[in-house]
Image (cartoon, one colour):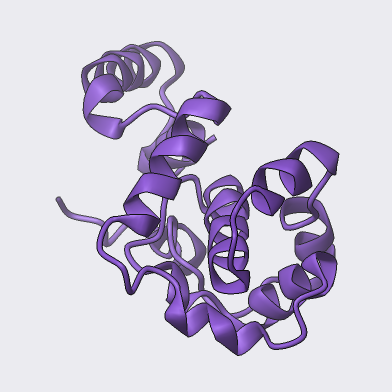
Length: 148
């Protein structure tokens, strides 16, 4: 798919492009009581931190990261502080056991009502097609509307 029309920010959709700002950390990566309850159910520090990374990253990015261990250090540090984990570098151990990260992503997806893109791609295509015909929006505006 051609994406030359996208701005730099739009082209980076779904991935971390640098570290989030302090405001973004506080908005998307703050763990409320329900989040903490879900996270604390995990036994080891690296699993708690990894689960928290996935839980908050999907809120920020709109999708699960292919490798949650590649989150910016600022995110891991912010979450570790909330979880009272002294060493955020323990995140490098997350997902070493096959299936852990995938299992956590499934739990988060089910609890949060997230749906797989394959389930909604046809619906999104129809919506974008109708919006393009009725609004006259260009590709950048349509991309922003779809991402929203």
